Image (tube, rainbow, N blue to C red; front, top):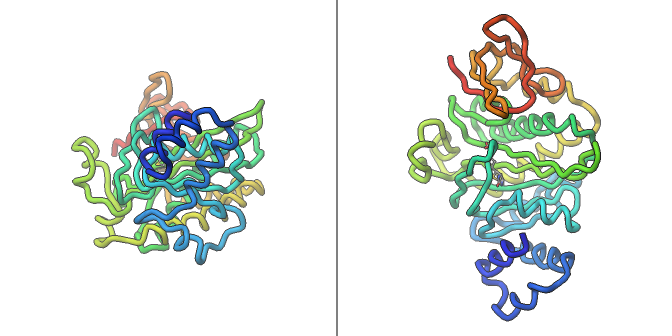
Length: 305
Ligand code: BTN
């Protein structure tokens, strides 16, 4: 991790070769402070001043770390959360060189998208992790509604869809201690000001972008601010145990309930079925062809009708 960050520093051009040689040996806390200092900048597109100006939150986004290019905002957020970054800190990058999607897939992150990770220290039981991911999906959907997207939907567990195509993905990672989650890193990637030409051929069919759907480029800083506000509201609801209300909001926007799907659980457990609903722990409830019910906690689902 340290070496990856040293490469980042070189790219940011903020420190000389000589300094880089010196920091190779510095203590990890000092190193973390240095990375945090570098993140106190404005890039061409992402501006702390714009995001913070009217930001109406208590803790989410009060600390913003902004970079031109990182390997993955989730990876950097994990490092910073283990080395002093506060609850609600947000890591944002204009581009990512090795962004991670779900199920070990890579995530395309060219200039023009919104790529960010939130550090949360919620002090909740491990079993609640799927719910915070669903809650984040609701926060993204509400944000898109605010900027004029009609009917954004959520495909279980956490793809945000517009007109049947994916516009946003969420990758939640937990740093756990015993059965309690110490820190959660919630990574959100929104295909905002992007053209479909920016994507590889195999992704074009199932992907859309805000620019395409709205017919114009949008303000990335505004999008980030609105999302951080929606996220804090739902995160507070989550921390207060308001799981049923979160699920109600999720169900209202579901792209999955009532559809025939192929479920792909980890370890290649695949089956087809009809989606009845979503259970109180965030599991997908599927009626299999033989009439039995299956609760799916993690995996993917492919819509078949
Ligand atoms: C998915 O596969 O749908 C999840 C994609 C998550 C991508 C975001 S972009 C910001 C953050 N950093 C990462 O490396 N991944 C997440």
